[in-house]
Image (cartoon, rainbow, N blue to C red; front, side, top):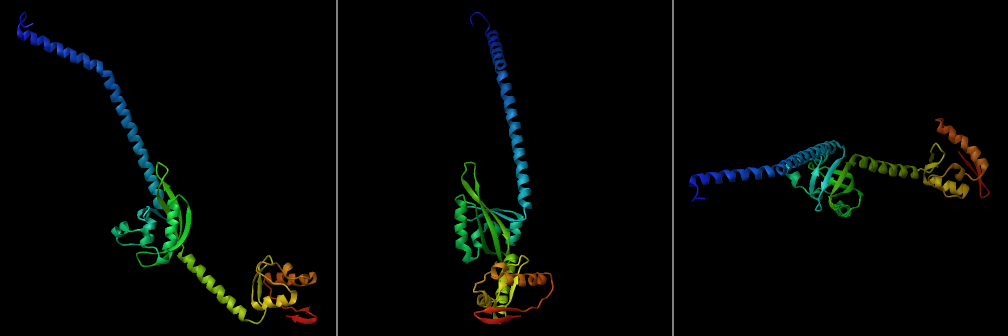
Length: 274
């Protein structure tokens, strides 16, 4: 080439040929590039839509989580608090957010209840749904009684990854219950000390309460041991006695005090009950 053409012209032809080759090559590759660009754009759009949907779902979940009236905790396998809703934060009542973040749930459980909680936690971590009651001491040093449901949380591979603890403060209910039990015991002590028959019936004429004197008297009269829940037809053996007592009971249940006498023969001895 150099021998038959000027070198400068050869270079120009080479350059021109190379340019044409590159141009032709690029044009041949263009459809694939366009398709790739379209696919890439579509993929990006799909990814953005999926991310947006995920954000909306997370927002809805967070709003739902934040507005549940119960205290919600997510606990790890070591009882570390991974997540909690505002109601749970208020329940724990710790001023320091840093201390709250570093807190283990077992740190606040009343020591006598710690063993049963650990057993409960272990069973939920193994995939069982469980319920439990235990006491905690919050940031104000208040002793609270919680009623909790433990639910296992699973990852994408269906393995337990954490547990969800739904807690309800039943301190006031527990206190009322204990007070009622004490009142009932006190009431039973008082009526058992009275040397007269005292018993109560519900509107279905079933025995709801009675003292020791009543228990002895009914045993003497009917040779029968009475118990809570028995109807007056079970207490009174003779039909005549039932016909005598039943209207009296109903009169009292309607708010009218009644006084009456009944004469009963017990072992050939006549006894009169007022």
